Length: 385
Image (cartoon, helix red, strand yellow):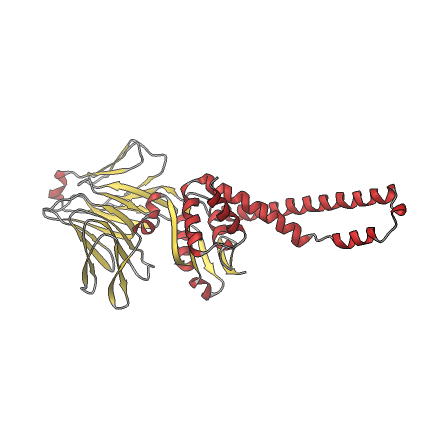
């Protein structure tokens, strides 16, 4: 292990990391599952030491003074055996406390696991006629056909491909839906070869065929779009509060119904973002348009942070705990509530692989803040420690 990383791990368990050190360590932890395990080893050692310090504090100095005050001739074998017995008792009590504490931690982890399971690749398809087809992570090399004549195919990498049928044009352009529930995510390749990654609790509506002169879809939730360039057919993404128009580019669009400020973030290329009240703005790579109280607001952002969910990570940068709770609730399909309203404004920075158990993320948040997560029934409650 690198000496610098080891130093940061020690400072982490001692609660002495600066904000920059915390961010650096979080990124390192997110790189590999083994890195997380190394941190857990450090934390386990510190926890055991804390238990011994807090729950068993023998008066060692007092005992030494007592021994010194007696004459050597009075220290016989029976007295020596008595102190041996005392230290055997110390070791036994300490071992019991460590076992009891470890059992408590494991029991708490099991409680989180009972109400929250990390998400996976799953979704369901709703054909235009209302027929519903489940798509799960076990489905591969499968052709899906709707009663209306639509065809979709799940390839060997669990990617959904939509294959438009020219013969459908005479029947009117109906809409199909790809729905990703809480605890899921999925990727679809549209008939023009554009690719869309859908996050948890998201829906993408797509037409049976793209009209001449334009390509148009509708999104509820969050999606990462990699649009195939076609100068003759602009690509439109419609949401409830903002729309995006592109020719060919990559961007992230977050437009959940409970989003206070929907946003569009440009990774490369160029997009025009149009707010429902008529305001519009052209974005450059690295910029984000947010629907604020005064209309569209543009800001520079770290796109790696915004799109980390596509790469299988949680990456929070000075994020509000309420926003983090929303992401946790969607990905782990769990209910979360706050015991005190002010806790929603607690800020947290960090990164973690999102396929890890929820308990791991909770430990990270609790270790760097004054909040506590607990399970009450089928809900996780956040309170002040």
